[in-house]
Image 1 (cartoon, helix red, strand yellow):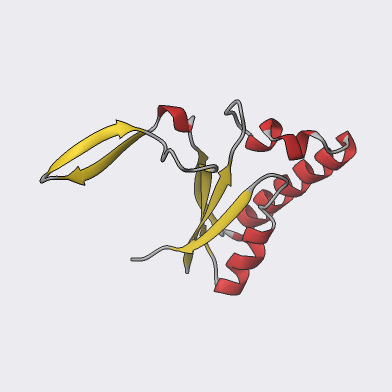
Image 2 (spheres, helix red, strand yellow):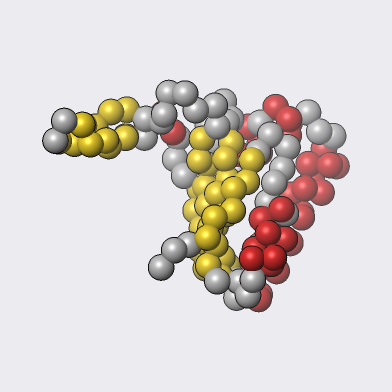
Length: 124
């Protein structure tokens, strides 16, 4: 079963890893930040070793995004991201796991201070 883990964040300024640019993360004691970073590396290693990590990537600054919409019979391109968004898609990881329960267990380990993680099944 394939799932995508979507990392939503709102760092200002934009950068990766996003946690380094989030006030909630920056306010943690250094040893706590180091522990969280080590846990992230551990889950990446675990998924890679188990063959569950298909791929993933950080995404560029949302201020440089372009949106394409269909309006009045033609495509309209505008600067992104969605103006009303407080959080932006920062990156993703594609997983191939045995069950939804496993996907949820892994996704929960991606959430950090100031970030929201979304788990969605891949269709097709």
